[in-house]
Length: 113
Length: 114
Image 1 (tube, rainbow over the protein chains, first blue to last red):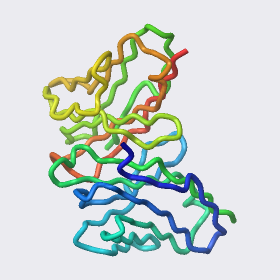
Image 2: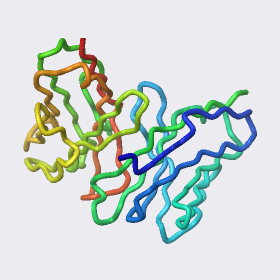
Image 3: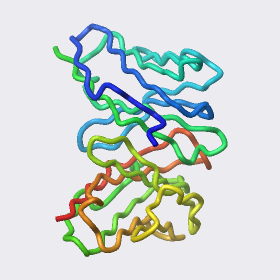
């Protein structure tokens, strides 16, 4: 059961433009959402998170938006840089069982110089 | 302060052999999680352990897979009688607090079953 879905396996943007990565979830019990970034041959690293009590969280060039009614979240990167090229995983957990964080399949972002 | 250390980074086994993957959590972290990433898929939770205890193994296959986190030494994920479908990247993560939402991941161990 794929409770967290990232429907775009890949995304390519020009340097300096905005990158928008999308994520949908089906479990209404999820109340904490995270984005992880993964470079080849490395483990995922935490990027940014958002709690369900908020609809936006910003950290520098990275902003995560949460639309609870649509069960949708997105990660905006602006301006995009070549170093942002990586696989981005969306993850979600529910407070009652946050040992089991559910991950999407990932979106490979390529930022072209 | 080293991060989460996993070894081996690459492991090749023939069908029917055993695979042992090791994970040393970050210094001070006593909570360890194992995830598996199959090709073209996301990370899937397998098991959550604290020292000497398995807290949640709801993601572990019922047979051939086991995990431990002894009082001394690394956590070990053991796969007996490996099959080709076990080929995957296995990631270990650790956290300082129980149920912490931000996990620190290791670089992963890639298992290839011939």
